[in-house]
Picture: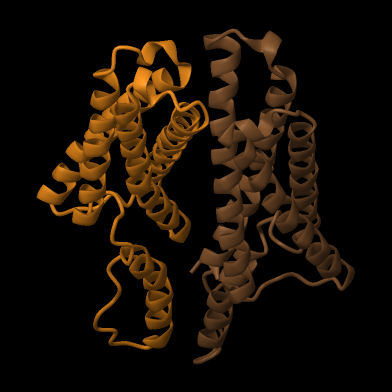
Length: 180
Length: 180
């Protein structure tokens, strides 16, 4: 199916050509997505996710009082999970690029899409919860002098950046899955 | 591709049949999504979104001190936008069902998908920010006696329910758009 007949010679040349065109259409469409798992663009997205998740986790962990706020603990946990997920996929992407293949199997794409959906939802919810607390401390209570507002805000911003790079990974894998 | 020729009789009957089958395939696939705009299931999703968004907005508005916290103001604003969007689509869905048609035009589907993406992201981020504040007041500071914890939690829960019913609308419209 993936290797259409190139030189049809005998009685029925047209139907195989039509079938081959019909069979080739969704495959070509699938390869149009640039950031899908196993592509250089996909690897870039994973590296960016890992970088910002590590940043968010480290900056938050440098403050002494983050464990007293549940939302900040959730941010550290979600960043940790994101780091594990993204670094695993960095390894897989490097392997796929080195052997010049892409992940086209439905099972692999379902796994990547589900994993991206879970991790991106978690990191986005953690970033929003932390942003709520940060705005409360900074704008509403105006008690930044007693808290590490700069670190909290930097960490929250990096968590939002992580989500920003997660979203294309999720959407492109989801589109690839649907176009199969 | 999925319907091989069963009775080849003469020289050229098959290509039109193959072409017809190939052309019909994506249309049939598109109609498979049950909760797409203009269907009864889509109307149910819109009604549920409107119900929970109105609930979240009203419950939060009954507390006197919600304007002092930015995250709660954001929740009220996001719920308001969600109410406007969902009720508009309730009207459109009722019209589409009454004339027994579905929204199949690409422009309409792009509009619905973009609107759903924006409103669901806003309501989810508002719900997460409010949940962060609510958990801070309730668990971390344990000062529910001085605050309207029950109303804050109810409103946050209803905002999460709104998002829960927004997500299928967004995903199904997105899938329909992609399958066209």
